[in-house]
Amino acid sequence: MSKSFESERGMINEWLKHYDVVYKDWMMDLNITNKGITELPLYFGNCFENLTRLDCYGNKLIDLPDSVGQLSSLNYLSLYKNQIKEIPDCVCNSLLSIYYTLIITK
Image 1 (cartoon, helix red, strand yellow):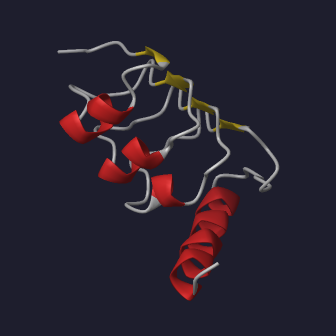
Image 2 (cartoon, helix red, strand yellow):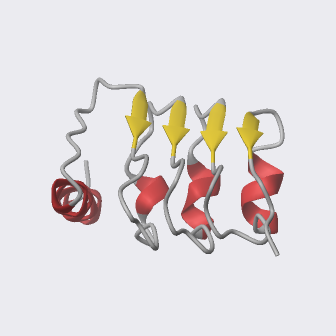
């Protein structure tokens, strides 16, 4: 693994720890529901190659970083009860085959 990846992984672990979330490399699900999260780190999608399920229900997200499109194993994404108005094209194009829940609010 590159130093850059290790550095990003360390920053992600610190970010998760701030929200009282533990994630191990072997885990396939990440549940970050109802944590008051306003944004995901820009490099978020670079650090979870095995992630198949990402549940972000009930946060305050307003957008997603482009790197979420790099979650190649993802098959479930929940963005319900956030403040996201639209999914970025780069994320939509790479996640076309997944099931995701999203409520667009005005």
